[in-house]
Amino acid sequence: MAKIDLDKFKTAWQQGSPTAGPLLTDREIQTFMHATSKHILVRFRRGLVFDIGFKAVLLAFALVLAFLMPCTTGWLVFCAIVVLLLGGGIGWQLRTLRQIPRQDPGARSTLDLLRQYIAFYYRHYYRAMLVMAGSSVFFFLTGSLYYLYFKYGGIPPVHWDDLLVLGIGLVLSFSLSAVAQIWQGNFQIRQLEERVQEIGEQSLSADSLDTQRSKMLRNAVLIGIALIAGLLLFLYLIYQYI
Amino acid sequence: MPGPSTIAQEFIARIRQHEGILHKVCAVYAHSKADREDLQQEIILQLWKSYPAFEGRSAFSTWMYRVALNTAITFTRKAAFFQEYTESLAAAADVGTTMESSEDLQLLYRAIAKLNKVERALILLWLEEKPYQGIADTLGLTEKNVSVRLVRIKAKLANIIETMQ
Image (cartoon, rainbow over all chains, first blue to last red; front, side):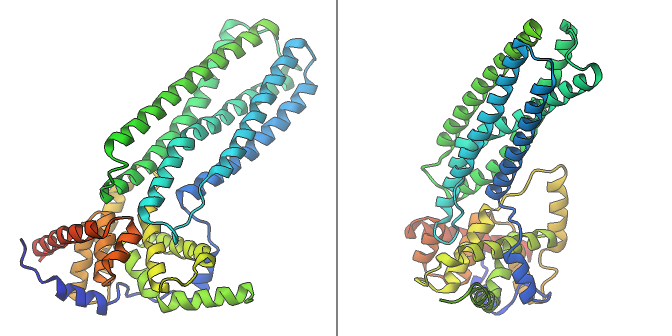
């Protein structure tokens, strides 16, 4: 045991100030009061709102394209699927937006806040990231279709190698966006989990975190399988009817 | 009923009155100048947003500590390449050197920087002589747990200071 008199340091603490610089001015405090928060939940909300707007724009572009292209049954089915997916995505994101927990650092304990944020992350964050990554797919797809429209006035006959390029483009646009966002999310949630472990909380022990992680992984795999199946169906539709 | 500008003026006056809390929490949790500014801004923003819910059941300083510590502990960094390296360099260069204070205080801040975030909160509230029940309420621990952990953390802090001297 160290023979250090901590009371001496306690007195220094109570008498001293940690800052040598000027104190905050009224104007600085006022600016900070209305600044943009860098809190994870606020960043998440901002990203979600931006993506809802982005999907709405893509939806408008897709609807315009639906009327521009020569009308066939296959094309109409394809457009209906795109509109449904984009509309469904927007609806789901609006619901998620309402479920973002309210920040209340004055009324809750640190442990309560950490539990609330971690629970939100595991319940909604990863799914939201996958839905957000879906926007890149529709961006790539709409962009490609506009390119074909302006170059050929419609969709020219497609061969298997065209579909392969399109498929790779779609998979890449989805996975690059999803991986980047999930990597960022993991980095942030790890910091929150470390805080919970520092508090030494038993109810959110390593076991329970492992359970949550494996549940999240299972969900991600299921969503991934559903997306790949959807992509194959989509390519089949293009090949068969357009 | 006071208007919004009156409430804002009252809030600013209270923050200025307890500005020391803000500087202490930021000095304990952020080691580079940029991090300190970010945290200072976030704490003031959270204080302002939570201010309408402050009912005066506890002292303003107690409430301010709670908001400031909760914000500092749950404030996460964004992932970036090379961030940890640049941060550790900044921390090594910055902690304690910008203080216009006694050697003891500078040493104390450098030692506190070696504790984890929750330990820092506990020791900070102990240094401020907050009652154990208040510390327990702020962090979500039991009073007994606070007492046991403070014994350990004080021993750890004393060891760190001894090594640094």
